[in-house]
Length: 148
Image (cartoon, rainbow, N blue to C red; front, side, top):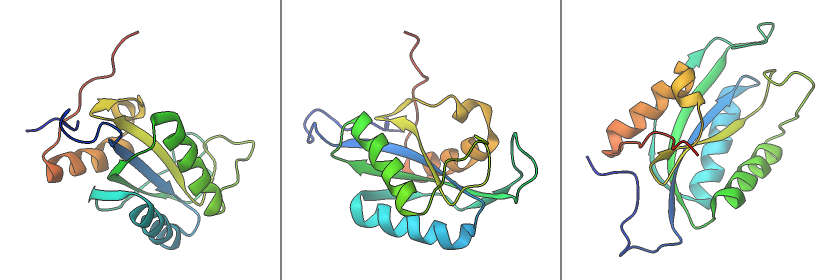
């Protein structure tokens, strides 16, 4: 299987990014909106099927819809993370007092250029299952997070 990284012969300013998506406020609507935005503004390589999952942490809320996308971006890591937060805001995300509370859309970088950057991949099936589906369908694999 090829790693998720681009070869040095390819444009060095292009990065492959695995994104975890989650929503439990009108998730069918917001998933379509997020997919439209990210497909229009990034190069979409692969996507998982959406799965319904029960909330983690704060339980008094609707179930979540979760999925994963593999995209290419020309932005660097911090700029792309900021871009994803801006997309969340465009989709009506309100960050309340309850960190794990309801949301229209949550977009998290799970892997960057083939390296896991979010421990949620190892900790939560709602992240791992969709990401693994994208990895299989795209022929990619991930390198573990490096210890600093």
